[in-house]
Image 1 (tube, rainbow, N blue to C red):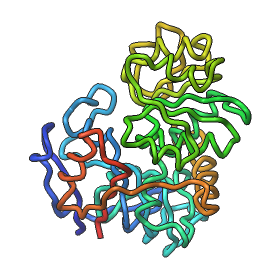
Image 2 (image 1 turned 180 degrees about the vertical axis):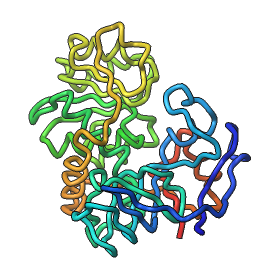
Image 3 (image 1 turned 180 degrees about the horizontal axis):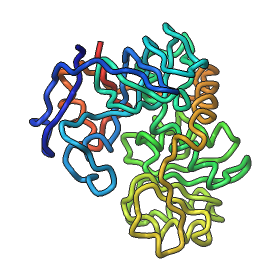
Length: 306
């Protein structure tokens, strides 16, 4: 038996329990991991609260978490990419807020020894999302990218990945996060009324592309600054599709491994930094989700099951 976080009804963190669960068995093309760290993402508390039930339905009892980093302790039929004892990171098939999880080999990459467990567990969800968004927007060197919610989970990756591509990045964020954005190579502006004027004050011709990770209602301003909707992409403002902008749903299977390898190369080179705001044992997952739901975690949150 091993421990895992489970809930048997939608609700607040009060419905969460740490329980013994039966051992998992790796199927064909899968490995089983001894989980060392699991990343916390906003989708986790949305699943718990039932806010995502129409997009991600669950069967009770259910678990949480998909970002994972751990050690392979069992390999399924046909697996040759990894062996028992290998340290890996990526996305899990079973909930990662647990001591044990299953993952598809295609969704994992090797974890470099120089990358701490708590950082490794934060890369898959937000990192792949940001990577794929920049690919879809075709952000290139010399262009100017506006990122809304630049200090958030996906925004932090998007800013640094775009800078690494040679793009100029303007990021919206509250003033308390401006210095952090500057450290990532972005030019910060505050969001809200007057955004177009503030952006044009530092970029008179506007911007080439916009990535919206916040859903605060900046889409009309974004279209104006980008000279049209074609290169405006949102991860959250689905109600703005009628304006002609792009919408993205992350697909780890499409280019997830490629993205993770690219991100890891930048992490190892010191060109991409992932601030970790807090780590939590399994029995304190409720606290981690509360911080995430507050909308101001100040960095990535990580569950350490071991």
